Image (cartoon, rainbow, N blue to C red):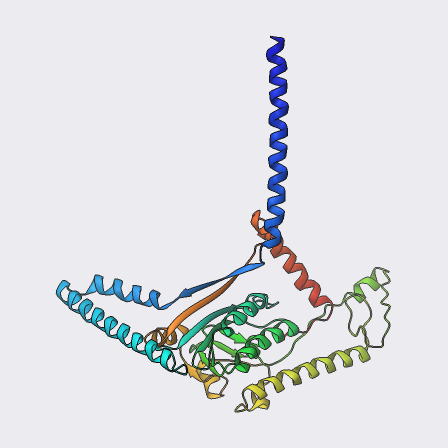
Length: 353
């Protein structure tokens, strides 16, 4: 009996040592893997297949068998002819390096803007990727939705789109719902702006809101002091007593920012009467077209469905690595953090497009 107890104790110690050794090796492997991991990865999907699948399904459901068979034969013949043309073009290209590919390409990006333009972190990687291949014969189409937000953040987002124009690649902006304020600052960079008939466009203005609790504190005999080095380090404050001089400086800063906004829009769309449209107003699609804020009334679906007939469509999406709290199902904490940051931003005199 004693022998069995001794053996069991020995076996338990061996198992414990082996388990500890495996844990250590696993930890080392995870650390090495973490060091090699990137912050995210790029996903690319060919969109033409989506439209082809929709058409094929409708044909099966609607057409009579004989008609469906006839149409399938015609389609197969067209694809065969197209393949022959592609082979000829490829052969010609090998003989003449200046020969172009059979079909142009359309690279599709999506930008769903919030107050902090957080989608910019994905947009920058997607643009870097497509510019490694895109030529002036191709197009970049951005499906843009944004009501605006922080000045510096949307300024960076617009600068990312400007990289496409700088590379001389046509940039098409499609607005199905809203591109206002900072959203329109991004849109105006496009070589062509397409809007749905009831999309909201414009709001070329700047706004800042600062609550002040000075009188409440004074009523309750609470002193609050703000110490600064630099005359205009702080103009309007949340808890201190605001002065006319501070208000005047704050308004001047807003006016200067508005001027930069108007100059940026004018540079990218010189056809606009900037004094007429830079009033902070918002217009629906048809009115925006009349004022030349957009170039055509069309939904992104219509544009892409038509393009799919003559071009290869590729949707790009940069997937960012999830943070630990998101992987543990605590995404709510991240939302709460962003709300606090947004609220804090307002309290430190942030300006918004």
